[in-house]
Length: 189
Image: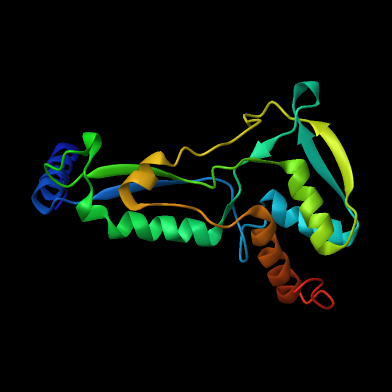
């Protein structure tokens, strides 16, 4: 039996209201760590530095450094669990508990943007290899100079507090990378 669009919508809304389905949107800011995405800068920088290939480091106008709010995967997981664990305790907007907030959106980030040039310097130190940097102007493809997560709502709702600094997180990533790809002995333990 084929249901028209209006009926499906009505059915969905009825279930939403009846079952008080709770939703949480989670916005992750530059997640990094073991088992990470190979298309992220920290990952392919590591690969290319170890292979002796040049890496492209972008900068903005007037030689301004591009910065990202790098967030270690364990801190993201803590944020996801916090959002799940507090779904039924949410105050919703305004802090006055009337009923469960059906839709919440949280930024999960580290709140400490770091210049990409510093990321490269940390990787050089951990890998004990000097990177061949190719400094280029930031392309006009929609990428931004700077990302910074406002985590105040996540802090208020479930006490979100990222704890892993970039040096520590990259050390864990590099150890994993060298082990996973069987690249010599681990350079740093």
